Amino acid sequence: MNKFDCIVVGAGPAGLSASLTLGRARRNIVVFDDGTNRNRVTHESHGFITRDGIKPQEFKELGLKELKKYPSVSYFNTTITEIYKEECQDRFVVKSSDGHSFFSDKVVIATGIQEVFPFVSVREYYGKSLFSCPYCDGWELRDQPLLVLAEKEEQALHMAKLVFNWSRDLVVLTNGVELSKEAVQELNKHNIKTRFDHIKNLIGENGYLQKIEFESGEILTRTGGFVVPSFYRPNSFAEKLGCEILEDGSLVTDGAGRTTEKHIYIAGETEKSSPSSLLISAAEGNKAGVAVNTDLIMERF
Ligand SMILES: Cc1cc2nc3c(=O)[nH]c(=O)nc-3n(C[C@H](O)[C@H](O)[C@H](O)COP(=O)(O)OP(=O)(O)OC[C@H]3O[C@@H](n4cnc5c(N)ncnc54)[C@H](O)[C@@H]3O)c2cc1C
Image (tube, rainbow, N blue to C red; front, side, top):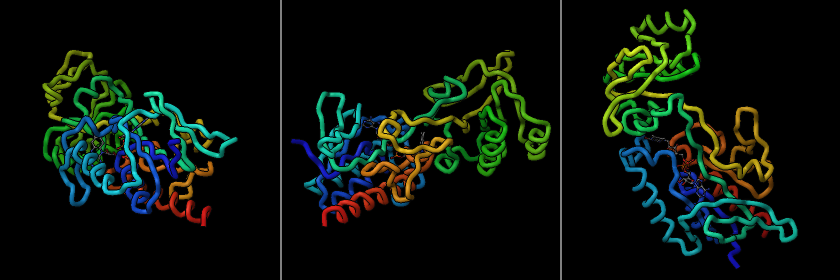
């Protein structure tokens, strides 16, 4: 029978880091990943010390290679479709899309989040010339003619102030939403222009933005920029398992990855349902791995 100490769902930095911690603690674990990490659309990841500029796929391969050193760790490249508790057996059942069932005492959910964009065709440019995190990609776009695309005033102001740190040639687009006079004045004071018109189309080549066409027919030239998407958890594993969730979408934890449901742990962007970074997610994965192992020790000693 495929019974494990712990099952880790997701091998982004959070899941990989939790798995490494558990493998090194001699835990019998299995890790699943289906390659849907949201940064797969970009060529390079930045800001992870010693790995600045690494390709997302290379990052994952390096992490998986490190896991291979630990004989108690198994890995499968497959989608997990269901996780539930089998009360009579006091174990979790994890089902994969290829019809297999795996059993464990504990589960780490590290499946990340996904974006919803204010304007659909942003997806074509996302990860190449449009991004959502200036700390990740601001340096690469520095001093270029940039846009900030956000549909809420607070978000537009916040993102514009951030991006201004990397480029002074900035236009804030709201795709039909009017900003307050105060907000416009604050932006204009710094020579940041605003346009509230509806966007008709983004124009560019191979993911590299060149122009924005508005419904009015007017054209604005921009080579890239930053958008403010909204985020969601792409599955309802934590919800279905009964983990408590706050109004802002974040899961209630003890700060070390333990959820309100015993034996269910969470790591990385899944927890807050908001964007983070490779380094922070990896650190949270490490914390969750330690929490799982500590609990196993205390339960079994
Ligand atoms: C365009 C872009 C550029 C970015 N650039 C940077 C950067 O330069 N520097 C930086 O620090 N951060 C960057 N980020 C953010 C970074 O990618 C995330 O913060 C980080 O990947 C979050 O880690 P995670 O482990 O929580 O989630 P993820 O990395 O998203 O990993 C979740 C994993 O779970 C797997 N998964 C999901 N559902 C299932 C399922 N049902 N079954 C099996 N597997 C599943 C996915 O395949 C995925 O690999 C960028 C993000 C984007 C979108």
